[in-house]
Length: 221
Image (cartoon, rainbow, N blue to C red; front, side, top):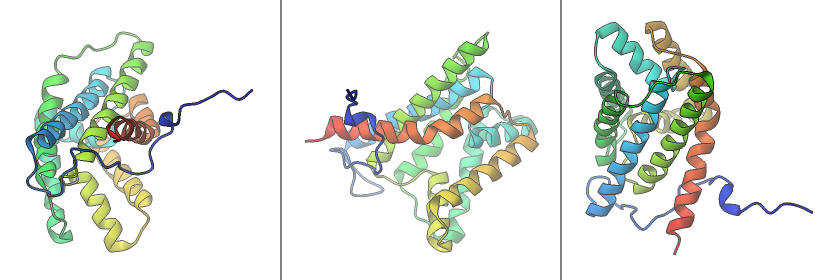
């Protein structure tokens, strides 16, 4: 007999339309902006879980760590600087930002700064893995909220989609090229690459897609 597996456990292939979805990049109802802020804070908190686990972080956080090592900035400020730098690349690409784009840079940077300083550092490999997995799940949950607000892509997502549109290259290939590039540069600058980096790369797509599916299911009319 085949075991029954709930359909909501299968990851979403699209971004669901939610009651809080905005039709404008720069203005929306307060509830949408609140959900956007919560989602971005959760995203940054999930990344902070990986930093505190001290076993490797996501490619973009490796890049931010490299900047922090070379400049003496804190991880929050280094993340903010890298986000602004990526946003500057939008200018020649003619990509349009939104309120979500701006808040992405600010709130994730603050969440990283605050949460990475108060989260525990695991003392065993097993606890490190658990903390990494929890962090990846929280990043996915945060993505499930902020992506469904539809108030502008994050700096990195906007860079990816615009390069995809201009070059015609598959979006997955563009994302892989960007992630490998920033990971390599961050590592050369002194960022931490390890088990957390590998697990994040393997699991983050499924985590985001699964939470999008759950959010869509819960909010479905």
